[in-house]
Amino acid sequence: MLVSAVTLGCALLLGQVAMPETAGPEAPTEAAPEQTPGPPPVPEPWAIQMPVPDASSPHQPYDGQVRCLALPPTPAIPSGAWRARCDDAKKECLVSPAYELDSEGHESDQPLQRVDGCVPNLMPPRTAREYRLVPALAEAPPGWYRDERGRVLQYNFDLHRRVYVGGAWAPRWLREPDRLDERVRVDFGVDLEWPGDSNRLHRMTLLETELYLGDAASYEATLLRYDVRSQNDAPLFRVTTFYGRPRRLDIYANPGFWMEVLHGEQVRREGVRADFLSVAATDVTLDLWHSSDLVSYVRLRAGPALERDVTHAFYTLVPAAALEGDLTLDRDGFHHVRFGAEAQKVLFAQAVEGRPLRPERLRLRAGYEVIILAVNDQPISVTLDGRGAWRDDVANVPAGWEWSAQAGLRFSMWAPARRSAPASAPEKG
Image (cartoon, rainbow, N blue to C red; front, side):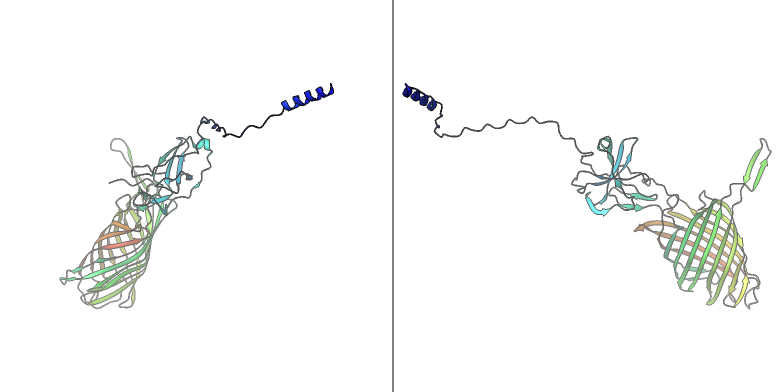
């Protein structure tokens, strides 16, 4: 009985043990099922391929904040550096490359010139995506223009603020005796101009020099010349007429002041040389007309000068009266006309053999200057000048007229844009 129970237990135990199977080829592993693509990731703000501006693109305004933008690189702008001026009301940004473009329209290594520095764009991403980007040309200062490659150039010039040097062919014709002197002129000087308070304009000329070389070499030079002009709002006289309906006419007086220090002149006629030095001259001026910015004018000028006759070593008093004008004919300062007529009388002179006791002088002058091109934004102009002089203050030389026609070129350095220069781009034409 005991043996049978043991035998049955062993049989049951052996039946529950799993027998090892013979190794066979591995079953192929099933590939993981493909995941269904979800929504695309949210792009960064302004993740677009921005085209470069062209000649028809708008210009950025000169005022307002400039923002630095980092856009995706493109073949034309591999750095992705752009500048933007944004209009928050329109939700629009005018953007321009931060570097100049080469002749192929690709980004160069030259940063834009005469632009304001940009600040990082701190606009939140959600807000940034609401703005529309428009390719544009970068801003330029008043009187300057930026082309489609981002290069800046000056197109407006103030020839009353400059350092200049020039030369001209300047033949002289003497009526008595009838002869022609072949000469050339070399000239240089410094012109300054600045506005003052209460509708005033100040103008100064330093080291104005004209050297004549060739037949009858001579010179004329001024150390300093200064004048101030004004605009009075209150009329000097109020004239009322009573023919028909009463009418009032306002007559304004716009006086000014003019002075000259150390004006030297050397005169040569018929082999005779005379030297004169005006130590100081002070005149009052009265504008017959002037422009609203006081730059252009037609005026009367009169006053005395203390002069030394260097040749004969004595001082004289020389009162003078003049009608003169200085006109800038266009908005950009390319065309200038200057003219004048001045009469002088020499008083308190010592007697000199061969000339009157009170000599006289009459000077006429008309000139035109026009800018033809600029080198490194420094203008080069053509000067045309006609002059006439009558005098009897040269001893032993008969009184008579001398005429001069002069034509040359002048190079102006430091000629900034005029104070009235527009901020917009120049007119096409």
